Image (cartoon, rainbow, N blue to C red; front, side, top):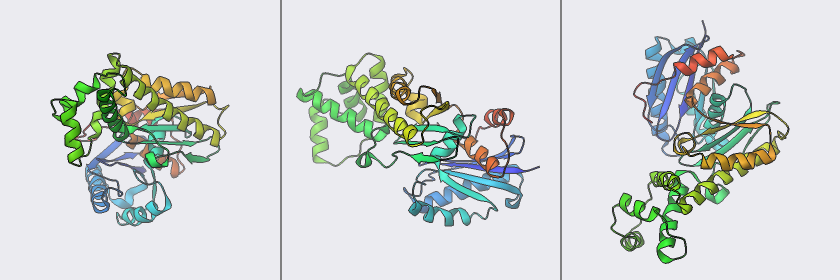
Length: 327
């Protein structure tokens, strides 16, 4: 029997699962921040903890692992890999691969080994792989480098909209009352003065206010969600053109909390679809329903030459739960 390790390392949590070649999960572990760009030592400690817990739970030794795949937030460029390779090497595993976490999210969300993935969580990212194996990443480096959206950017947009509405530069919005209540101010003037006098970070969860406000018909909130979807659709369309996938049939996997949990009314999704269908009419949007760590295990299996069929994928998906997992 062969065994495979998959790891999904993000900015707030790190998951690791070990499965056998039949797709049966026999061990799982977890850690905290796994993004070296936030804290390098913390990321290494989280990876070591998650892998150690998974090995202990499985009863295996490191040498018994056929292949290990690490899908990691922040694994974007060669300078990142120069940092990450020694970190993974120090884990002492026999055969490993490192990729950006876009790729395990994509593989978790589609039954094929190609397609496009859009991530919209605290930030945004887009990547694609065509049927010939060519890959392309569009964005993922923040507003200055062309991105728009995700929790951090949308929180700023909510704050700006409330200030602009108070000054008469924007139409009135229910976000005004929601934001001042959430941040603990009695009115916008008090909010403005405090933020002018003191440097304060805006919490990313402010973006969640948009969804309820939009469901109630608020035009400002709806407009921001449509813009978010349109920008994600532009990234997907650019990726599709770069990879010459316009005539292909493939999945566009939607990942990240704002797409998988927040967009219940489908405003963002509809805007994405409108853009994507102009470039690739045969592309199909799929909301990611599995944990991305499942994709890491599948990639580990495929890297060792194994063919992953629907039965194995279903088995991995039904047994993917990581102990003490938070949402």
